[in-house]
Image 1 (tube, rainbow, N blue to C red):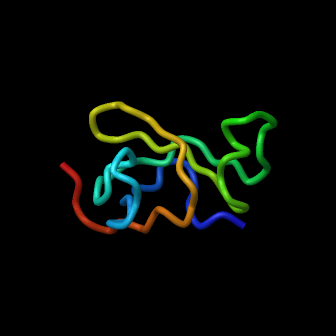
Image 2: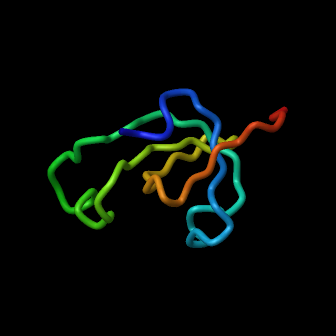
Length: 75
């Protein structure tokens, strides 16, 4: 079961890789409970993968363990 769903606001955890923008706020725009085939998704550990979009429009795929909920005001 996934922790987050479409349109949830999340924050990348502080210990995430630099390329994932630790501490950044983003929106969930994709949820992969079952992995699509291919090398890209095979590199992630077991668990749910999300596509998130940052405020500047860039999007990345990220493992659930590298996200936390965000309840603050975005604006």
